[in-house]
Structures are given as C-alpha cells and as structure tokens.
Image (tube, rainbow, N blue to C red; front, side):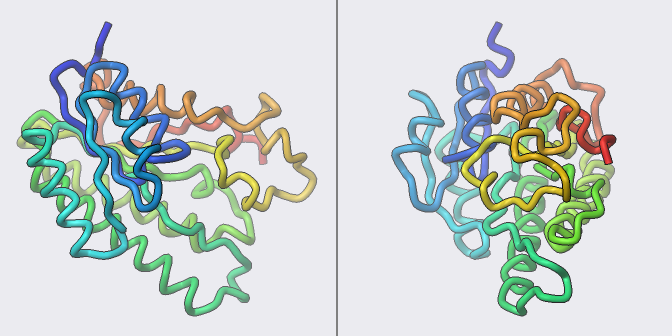
Length: 243
C-alpha cells in the first residue's frame, strides 16, 4: 500500500538523521520528494529516491530558503507536504553561559522556521499537510537545553496558529515531537543526571531509531491522519513521563 502515491513533499534538512528517514519513508510510499541539504548531495539524492530531487540551501539564509521552496515547487510540479525539520546547531549549554553567538545562531534558526512555515502556508496545495519537527525537550526541565526547547515550543505555537489560518483550504498543520533518536547528533546531547547513555530516559531503555520517528511522520502525512490537526504528536517511547 503506497500511502503517498501522487503526492509531492519537501523535507528540509533531509540528508541525515530523522529528516533522511522521513524522506526515505515518503519516497517508499510513493511520494516524489525534494530533499534539502547543505553539504552531502549524495546522501540527499539517495534519500530522495529515483523520482526525487536534492536541493542545496542553507535554511538560515532567507534568500536561499525562499529559493528552495520555489525550486521544490517547480521541480515537483507543486507541493502537497512540507516537513520543516532542519535545525542547524542545537544551541545547548547552561543558560547563564550561552554566548551571544550561540543565541544569535539559534534565533536565526527560529527565523528559518517562521519563514519555512510562511512559504509552506503560501505554497502547499489545498488538502495538503505541513509538519514541523519539535522535540520532547519542550516537556523536560533540562538545564542545558533551555534555548533549544524554547525555540521548539514556539514553533509548536506557530503551527497551531497556522492551522487555523489554513483550515479553510483543508490544509492540516501539526508538529511531531520525537525524543532522543539514534542519529549522529546523539553524542552531543547531555542526558539528565543518572541516565545511562543507552536508556535516554525512555522506559524502553534505548533511544529511538530514526525509522521509528519516520513512521509517525508518514502517518501524519497520510490520509489516515486526515482528522489530526493543530496538535503535537509525541514519539519518544514515554520518555517525557519518566522524569
């Protein structure tokens, strides 16, 4: 069953980690996928599949981001699904020790999400889906993820507002909130005190595999989630309840 047959999707930050897993899942289910990347074109092309395209853009550059959306729309003949996933740099650190450079960089990331949601809202066809990737960190009081979690929480609220704006066109807007996943970023994440590197606070005693998060993103993009809107889907193995 190819649940996204005939659909076109853009995934920002889709050449690695969760973004890549989502791109691969969408392509496997029949979508034509535009995979945004910064450095690894080969990985982006592999994730996009035979019918997809790889598009280079630094999403923190407003000109490049807007060009990305225009190129994706043109290459795919329109957009039905947008996954705003790219979050360059995590901005981790104690709040009292964050440098202005880190703060400015993460504010640029936040701006990139705002612009991505703007572009998606303007371009996604009637009946489409916009998914923003949030984080279980929004539900945790961790001293080193305050800036990152605050940006993700603000993104969730933007999606709620956008869902109301786009509802007359039948466009759904949701957020997907994964917990810690086994990607190349996991080495840079500071776990809560007492949590072993393998359990990442989940009752299942392990981080998620990217494909497990991608399955949830596939559900949200499919007609099976046609009545899911304005909400956040938590995909974290129960970690947000283990604190």
